[in-house]
Length: 140
Image (cartoon, rainbow, N blue to C red; front, side):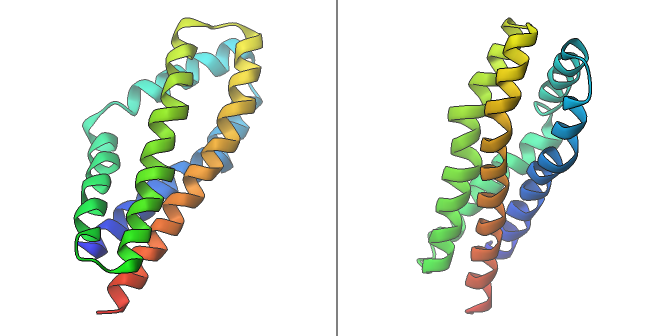
């Protein structure tokens, strides 16, 4: 369970890193209308079983891995559940929902300014969670 949680966290960290390193810089090079349209399409694609299965499945695996009581597994679960899943639900989803309603250049500029740094945090938290689960697995 712990190794699967580590792998899931690593995959999710990779997705978030790709956003930070590739997608967001690319969107900044487009017009606001093009960027909004592209981000809306990406947000819709995130609601598919492929991404949600890994994203939410990793949350479940993280919780189960922590039940073993190992401190590294608890750290991994906390990092992923708070920094990966929690930040997504509390911060990114509301902004994505607002992007569906508000498609102005001003909102787009604000969206990128707020969304990107929080995404960096999600990437780092998910990567740190993966490392913590790996450390837990190595203790066995």
